[in-house]
Length: 100
Image: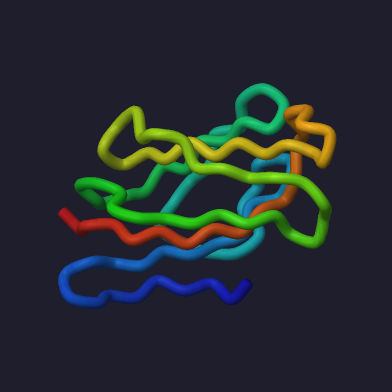
């Protein structure tokens, strides 16, 4: 996935790739906190809220999902293997946020 940080109609689109370890492989404007197996929190700098988003797995069979934001600038992501077990997995994401 190509890293992109662009503005459109007052909303800002942030995209990136997060490695299974929680390290950022591509993208800017965010940090990652790695929790238990398959649990990540994306934290976006300088934004009021996350409006919409999508997440996909990177080259593996399994599942990924976005959770409900716990803070206006945070977005939880969970990943599972094809058996439904929480598993650390590289993933791509794209979200729209409102700049402060």
